[in-house]
Length: 81
Image (cartoon, rainbow, N blue to C red):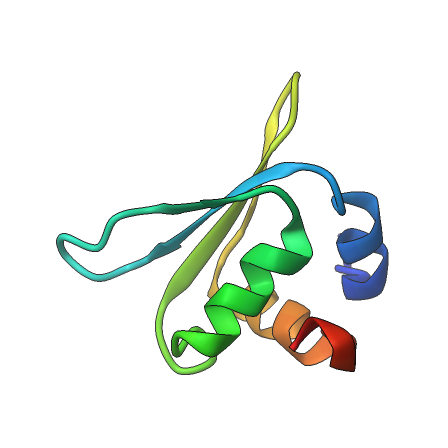
């Protein structure tokens, strides 16, 4: 399924999320929206590192791995940067 980054950022604007860089010993960081998680990823080198963002929903989690995180970073509105 193709990712629609703008829809994802909108749909999960109030969802708990975690950002995990794929670096040994790096802790996961928690956020209250996907946009906040993506902004954090962008501001901390997520465009150039292996990374994963997980959206925690009541029935399932949605995981965006590196390539999709890069798409989300590219789609951030200017106010979210």
